[in-house]
Length: 252
Image 1 (cartoon, one colour):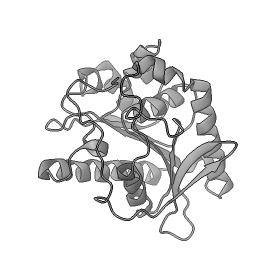
Image 2 (cartoon, helix red, strand yellow; image 1 turned 60 degrees about the horizontal axis):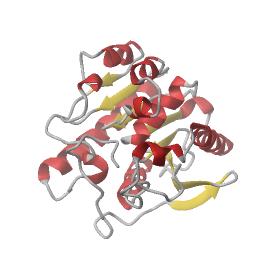
Image 3 (cartoon, rainbow, N blue to C red; image 1 turned 30 degrees about the vertical axis):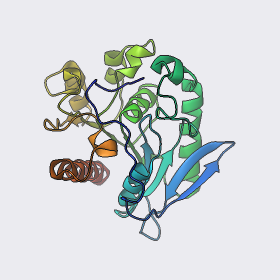
Image 4 (cartoon, rainbow, N blue to C red; image 1 turned 135 degrees about the vertical axis):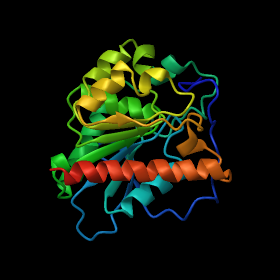
């Protein structure tokens, strides 16, 4: 089961190799699981919703959320799979497995998370999103359906899932209604790289595509951080994501 290119980073066990986690795992609404890290700013005015890949909110992903929070954002990681992950279902058919998590359920989770953030005093138009792999699809799908993110970033996005689930990736991406920065790896599809119709449309809305040519899909959430070039490009991509989000917020 794989929504990633054939040569991609697989799941990694980073337990013990990531910093001590600073956030809190809990449920909001009726049963939406989240991992939340409050900003280091006493009264944060902006938030980021983070969507993991199909391996779920691993410690690595949570540590990324903590890093984002240290830059002044309240961060909420939403677990739309409810602790079901690709690693726990390695033999499952991808489309059949993902079909267990209907778009109506995912969109409800997004609505619950946004309402939760707004209830904490952050304005509706001050919420950005970051998504890895599957999470990039979730962001693009939600935006195409009218969810008004301030902006979004997706390293190694798997927006091709829209085709696999019966939709049309190009049509979905053409309906993205906000600045959206995507960061394909070298082995991600060319349709997500500069010069494509998708990227041309994204640029019309303030977005862009930056390819990390020497990386393979999944490097941020699953790459081996003991490899210097992987660690270097993880840091580069996360800093680029933060710079992009900062710039969009400052432009208002």
